[in-house]
Every structure is written in C-alpha cells, then in structure tokens.
Image (cartoon, rainbow, N blue to C red; front, side):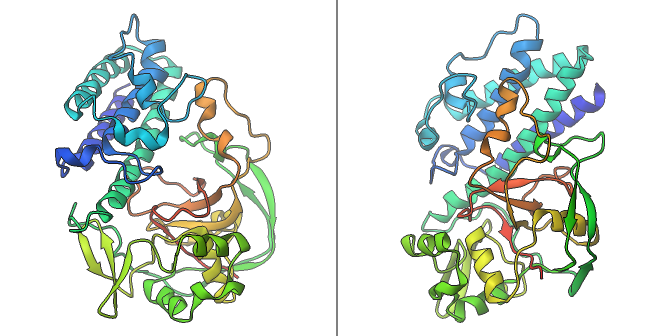
Length: 382
C-alpha cells in the first residue's frame, strides 16, 4: 500500500502546487459555465475520495460537511441533487480556508485507510480517484487561463505559458493497410472507455509527423478561411458566424501583429510554435483547406508509437462512441464516461498541461466540437 499511498499524496500535493501562485480572489470567479472556479475543483476532487471511498470503506466515517455533496458533486445523478454547473462561482461560502481544511480532513482519513487496508476495491477506487484528480489538474490550468484572459490587465500566472513548444520532426509517416488491434490491453490503469479490445481494418494512409504551427494557421486566416463557407461543416459554419469566431481563442491583432494571451501574460504569437486552442470545427476546416483531413482515432493510435506526441490534444475525425462490448459499471462510477457518448469528438494524445503519468496511446479524451479552451491542436492525415 506504500506505493499507492505515495501516488495519492504526490497527486494531492501537485494540485496544491498549481494553486500556490493564486491570490485568494482567484479561487472563486467562474468566467463561463464550462470553466469551473479553482475552489470548486479542489473541493470536488476531495469530495470524490470522500464519496466514493471513505463513506463505504472507512469504519464509522463522519463526513466533513453534509452540504458538500450538493455543492461539489459534478454530474453524478445517482448520488443526489447538485448545484447547477453555471452557478459554481456563486459558492462564496465555504471560504477557501475551509475548503483546504476539508481537503486536509479527507487526506488524513485516506492516509489512515491506505495504511491499514489491502482491500483491492479500495486500491481500485483510489487509483481511479488519482486519475480523476489528474484530469482536474489540467482543467484547473485551462479554466484559470480562460478566467485570467478576461481580465483587462492580462495577468501573469507563471513563467511557463505552455504554448511555446515547436515541432521536433517533419515529414509524413506512411501506414500500410491491414487489420489492427485497438484498445487498452495491459494491467496498468485505463478508463473504461478504452476497454473492449477489438480489431479495425484501416486503408493505407499517411499522417504528418508534425503538428500544425501558428504560421500555417495564419496562412489559413489570411486566405480568408473563416469567410469561405466551402471549407466548413455546415454546423461549424453557423457556429463561427453566430459567435463571430475568426481566429484561435486568445488571439488578438495589435499593430498588425498577432498576439495571444498566455499564462505568462500577453505575448506575440510565435509563428514556429505549435498551434493551440482551436475547435474541432476549425481543425476540420483547416484540413479541408489544405486538401487533407484529420486522422481517425484508430489511425492515430496505430501511428502513435512512431509519432512525437504530447504537446497538444489532437482532434480526430472520430465521434466519441463505445468500443465493442463496452459495459457501464454499476453505481455512481458508471456515470464517469458512458453517458457522454453523444455529440462529442475524440481527441488523442496529451498536452503541455497534462499531468505527468496521465497519458498513454489508448487514452480517449472527448469534448464537444466547438470546444476551444483546452490545449488542442491539429495533426493532418491523407
């Protein structure tokens, strides 16, 4: 149990590290329905361990506060009522000091439990909780960035803005046609949406070793890509026009030069850096403009062992659907992935904001096609 306890503690400590640069005023604002406040993230990840593990496995456990199940439940309908997502920024009470006391309370009891039990179900759920918190660590950064971007003084959060990486490879990787095995097939952790090992037939294809750069996307903008309906899926065309979308998120032109808000403040766009903060609609339109396409998630997975990936979540041309023989687990844990398999597109890889040890070639991230605030980019295929 020492290993799992250390993993638990390291994960919890890293969340604290993300929060260290914050001022007390930064913990509560909610800038959009999709961007939760830091206070909610750190309370929700704590609630997950209390609700899923301590209530069931710690003898005579007493909850820290009975109201927290309503305040910090995210989407688990089987557990009970919850605050509306768009109202998370209204939780001015409890204070952030009390939330950190809640966190310490749960950590104390989780530590005691992990030191005294070898129950495989506790281990399984703890590993799930660790991976759940790692997902929220990335969301903490993306949500903070969105909130800070709306501050007119362009505040600096850190020196590491996570958007300056450049490609280290170029050219095309060719994959021959054949029947390939897709899915997670080791004893290591995976989410349930990666399970269901199955065969797929792939036509021969080529996939770019490099991700699309800022300069390449500027060329699309300058070629009136956002004004040319023929490049866009119909739904994407209405979306960009209804929302006045004509550039990646956070970009602004100042004195004829593109700038963008980053976690280290407003900076000139580096043309050689890898593009980020584009939606699926924009990725698909760019690919069409180039006379190419986005890879399917299966093409991406097969090519991944020969690609340098991990700087951007990469949009694929695959809808988020269950693998063969996918089963939704019983209880609240079963609400983790399966019920979202509609109106979402799959992203593969990882990003510069993804926590360490939280990526693998079979990982299936998913978001609605209009999503821009994640560190998402484009890899082309043909």
